[in-house]
Image (cartoon, rainbow, N blue to C red; front, side):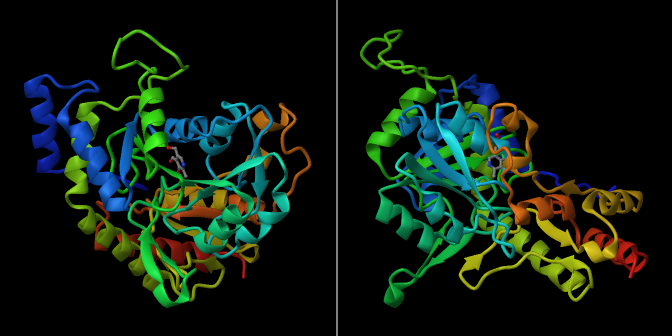
Length: 381
Ligand SMILES: Cc1ncc(COP(=O)(O)O)c(C=O)c1O
């Protein structure tokens, strides 16, 4: 079975983890934490990094930093992971949804304006499957309405966006460098992993200090066990950070491999009737976190059937997200009832992603393409 994803861990990871074990710095104090925070912030073009235990709590902490009042709203795509909506709900806010752009599958920025109300506090921009959200119009809208932007760049390590707001000085910037706070996940299927892990990035020293304190139970420097605020234990361990730092050292190699996988699949699967391949907009450099495809209904198959047929041929896949507005857990709480987002609904049923791990070989990629072609050639014409 060709796995959908496998981490690529090497000698440097072993060396750094071994150092933690030899020295005993295995908990959340140790030099790897600071070096990983500074290194990742620097790579993404931000001043401060706050490492946390996973991407879900990174989002929760980012929203906590905004100090919502009960009923405040945050606009986000329906097509995302539940972590985004939970982050808002756990902070007493209300997630407000928009549909996806049918070409990039990221939030449809044109739909955001109509969802802004006097209660809106922020927009959560989620870069989907390694392709950036169209940030220029989103940032312009946020500026015009005094809204914060939280970026969820969990799936977009190293992806780049061409800022064109100033036409004379357009510049490529990395995902994670746009939001007042941006969030990352370092789960094992991400471009760089710490096993479990996450990070918040910001340029704002006040927010950095607040996030750092809340991550660590709001302990005070002058008197430990004295608390003036409600905090969390969202700390990352030195062990985890050591893995992350080792991987960060070969980030350019990792991004190059992901782009090679994406572009090779593009060549191998081009012009297949019934299959929509991922786009790369002229203003985007995708990292193809996962090589995602959407099957046309004309094939007579949905993604579940397609996945079963591929599995039968030794190819593991994963389904797309199911939109937040289709989640029973939210309906039970009176959220998103009767809301419809046709693009999110369609891609949730027709989309899946193919093996895209860093250990994928050229031979495996060819095998995957052959399996896809074979299944499609037998599909209803
Ligand atoms: C877009 C997005 N945001 C947030 C998360 C949550 O990250 P974690 O699994 O580290 O909690 C993920 C996880 O894969 C994700 O894909």
